[in-house]
Length: 125
Image (tube, rainbow, N blue to C red; front, top):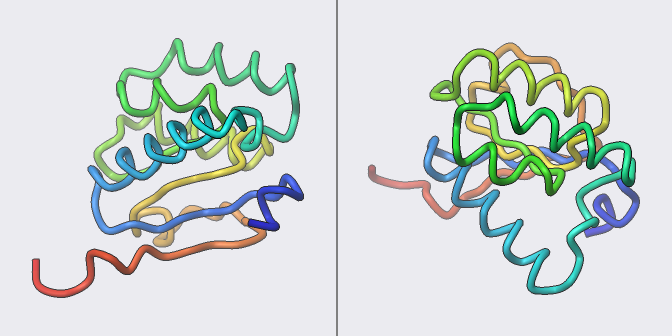
């Protein structure tokens, strides 16, 4: 994806809390398999240090395990501190990829260069 290669922020909207974690985990695992771990970080070592330190303050295990890879999740089920930290990291350019439910679209102003919507869960549920 051009946006990732150009180190631009992207937001991916998914349909459920569990889908945010699953999508982020898949991105993380794919980047490890392809030896592209730094692909989702625009600030190099300084950003990695900030993400590692922030992960120590996060309670949600799904978020804690992906932050250091430059990937964040955002949904109503996250604790308030976790959501706020993700919003700040994304706004400051430390997170390049944000996987979110519609809660982000309903009142949080976090500009991104591109956004994508997962359509694989549409239909009866």
